[in-house]
Length: 420
Picture 1 (cartoon, rainbow, N blue to C red):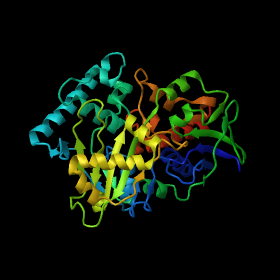
Picture 2: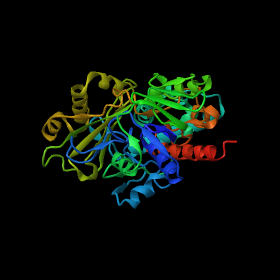
Picture 3: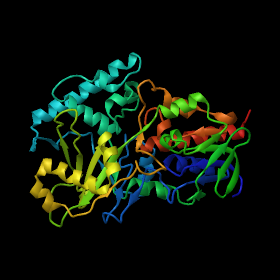
């Protein structure tokens, strides 16, 4: 491999955004990707369900200011511009919730988030410790923790939760967000199937790969904190203690998807029909559903937290069985049996050693970890980090990863042009 100005480790959204900035500024860039595709945790494929299916990132969160929204629009991609959730699909004991019950649930969510906000002036602690009591407490905890953040509330920093709790609308892309990132990577100098073994940063950075050493004026690391915490990338010398503490304070939670196709003529429901079940108690882990996205014959279930990790260990057959049982809570076992074709597609972010989870949350006491990792400028500013974990407000989103990569690239441009 030829030496370059900047070596970027990882071809996910952050790496692609950084490469686009640096190439546009005239720098020689090499993006090194251990996997066989670009996109990272944005991955769209059409084989398993006969139409585009996003295994990872699915929404343009906070869509209006999201930097990816105008790029998607410029490509002419099809956007589903949904507003804030109204909980119209809320089910209680197999029946659709009344308007009053839905309103009670929405008010309980608002009360929880108000309690989180009010606690940010105190020392950082876990979200569960300030969650209000009430008849909706278990359901709110499941929704805000396992489903939204991929982890239970007692494992989540309340200060970080508030910092990254996004306003605005969340839009979907019919062609897939993974497809969007792949299109944005076209023409960039990306080497697939090229794992990085080590980054030597004691002097001018050197990146070690199975194909040999690559010398660069600067290195940008965009791999997940799950991989970094597990030692999947070696640094010599070791990273400073404060950087490693930030990495360990930002573990990846897990939100998994299980998807099946509907039988022809089954469940003639409107596009984007949602089902959400009231949790019976704190041990209950209901699956949330979206049926017929973009009018397709898809039924997609979402499950997060401990139940998602357990299903990942048990395999796709167990995930499909759980899906069918959970959807039967809403539609009845006989209807589900007739409506769903056999064979599920289950996402595998937990099992994949290149990711080790879905997206980050900060653990209690680690509310400032994102800024520490974002601002780490090692080797005289020539070794930096980027990714969704590094964004202080739009973390755990594709837009946050993209913005983080672009911002890190701009910092490297300044460093390389004016090293003093």
